[in-house]
Length: 193
Image (tube, rainbow, N blue to C red):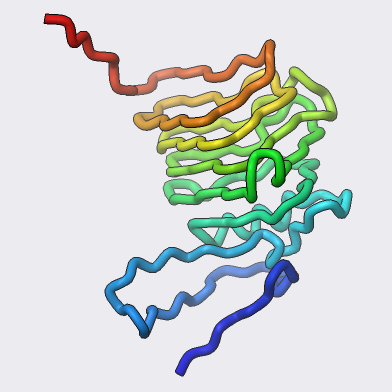
């Protein structure tokens, strides 16, 4: 009745991919469709010592959930998350999926008005430690869960955002973890009578 793509960790898309069709689940039509893909399908390959930014960029441009396998993904350039959209980057564990960056003075992941999540990964700056920003968010919302950040000057810079949800976040010493500007975050309440 329907076709399935079984690609595992192999590249199946090359060049510009503008749209990917998602077919309704015929076994359970009322089920919520969550379109998830693997970064490897777009050319990102762990442990190959080549820049994976273009493959990751292509994946986040067409999907709301991008999964990463076990291993080291190298970034020599930044990834811009889709404006006014939603994307989750999901690793295989904070000690199993590593994003390694090496470009000084950059923001490695930038987003404008995007609902973005980072889950189960390590992100490390090894080229010029203490000179760059890991995540730069302008508007939108951010969720971080089970993420280890290492070597950055600033972990997360947030402007004009209204939702930050952080759980199980690990950072190295001497790291400016969060910088907030013009954010409308919930204020703590005083529950004393």
